[in-house]
Length: 286
Length: 268
Image 1 (cartoon, chains in turn orange, red):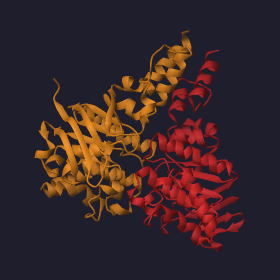
Image 2 (cartoon, chains in turn yellow, green):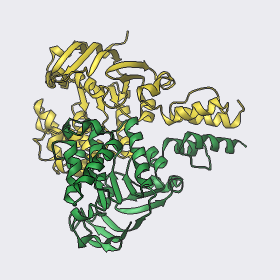
Image 3 (tube, one colour):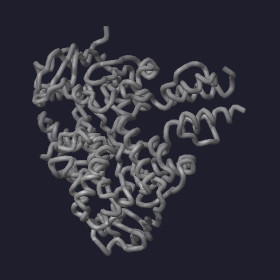
Image 4 (cartoon, chains in turn brown, cyan):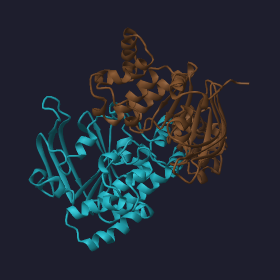
């Protein structure tokens, strides 16, 4: 059996002072080295789930938690947020919620986590320079993080997570303020890290991107898992619309073409698959 | 309602110019999208439309009147700007107060304010949240609260700054419905967006900015078919357009139906 990066068993959570459960009876597991996506409408519990992986729930956001979350085989209840942060890194949806608010420059912001780990200064300087170059923020290293645009701040948020070299990366809608090419840039880096063995858990509304990267997709609705499978399984499921999710444009169009017998009866969920199906269909009758 | 930008230059610092001579006319009611890379100058441009920022040189004319002749507070009755980050705009302790604030400032009659609150709350789906603190709303609702607060003033032009960011399918549909409603009511909607599918499907005119200048300006078909120029502006067309381009279609489809028609035309 594959080794598991994250294991969630019958997890339920209700935030303090609220009456309804944010998560209810959620179970799934993420094998090490996989690219795992969580999708669903707004407010279905995706971010709440991400917060449990890094221990922000239940250690920081209080509430009633039942069930179990294990990261690298160990329960989050037995580890502090600081312990967990050496194994798993979360990039927040809103970068301004992630900033330390203690750093006066982007360079200090990037170095913040390293400083907490007691990394030597020379090493720190080297790592900051490398990450800044990777994230293309080397031009703003001397600026105050609070003066950055949303897109730049998201790059800094990524950088300050990458710099700690976590084995598991959790990305919670972390490119919403980036232009499409900027987002592609970042996902090229994420994909490379995944190929190098880093486990990636991603929450995103961009279904074309999810279809391209995910090994497995979990669909949440009202705090509960309703569907899980490969991109082809999930995006081919007729119940998807009920769960407030639209499949990638490539899946919808290949489905429409297949229904009219214009292409093979196959679902193309990625651009690459759709291109192959359309090209084949142009040359052959179906 | 018409906004003219004439040789507009702007920089936050004298030695660092952001907008390098923009000439543009916005008129009529066909919704306009402004797209471009982060840092291209989109937000800086639209903030000139009601004097939140004023040109370093050149002119902004609203119905022929120079924008610098009166305050933003006055222009806001004609040209409303919805901030990119809701937290930059919201500051009162209930949705209702957010909705009342602008109209009161521009001297709208109390009866009309009351009437508009019900109408606008319905439009942005916040009828049940009028007494909620804006910071207790979820992200989509918060965004629609800022949109509602601007629409309350009944401006002729509504400028949305990245309204799609972080929204789910439902939020996109709601926004689509809202833009159609405003257009039908004779308003001009101008929207900055990174969501190319949303742009292609909802707007009649697309303006592409790059490095502080307008690079392309035309219908979605005209703009998204210019693959080489788009690349230099760091824009990727919507998925179905990319697919059509990858298989060599002559058409520039944005929807499934349009793609199927293009497929049938190509196969003949």
